Image (cartoon, rainbow, N blue to C red; front, side, top):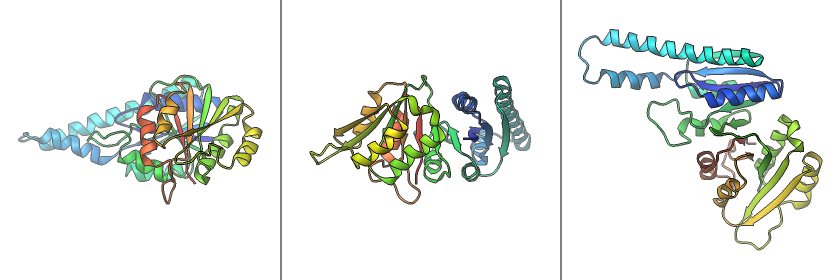
Length: 278
């Protein structure tokens, strides 16, 4: 891994994204790009609210709001730059001023990993986590995504959500190729099955054959239940974990890691998520 991009809302800076992106870049000797996005519709809502009941001075008010936004944006960039310099992390800054979604998707095509806060919305109207913006990025991004956690403890164990599908296996492989230094950690291959008494891991021989050569400390757990039970099972593993999931595919959603599960993982887990798709 040589290039990490970290996505920031220039008007609502995420300290969690900054801390995690710098840690990953420093740990893996990668170049870090701070992608500062700006959604003009956000400013539009603020201006509209400020103008409600306002008479006269519309131009002056708009100019004042423009100045405030510009100052906030510059402060966010300065914070990122100062942190990278302090930690000795090589960095670049990209200031994208068109559609936040389109710009970030374009940037992701030229990155090894995207680090982002799952609470990013780029909307003045507060949305439930994950909002429309985040769902779109998860579904269409051209590189794996690392979703940061607000309360992240040092990663001690890895949880691979696996159902035998190409999407879930692709997520495991992409994580392994990007983070070979993680191979010495404890790993749990976690699956759920419903409507069957067969509790063998899907493609049992093949997955164990592959995992043995990458994660010698891997264990396996298959639970009789529903897909929704995966959230509880992950939470039971504590906060010192990283969950790897092939939750979104480009052309269709995975059969069992459907949107509601990925959304619940983002809302309920106090741990980072690594998500990618085929």
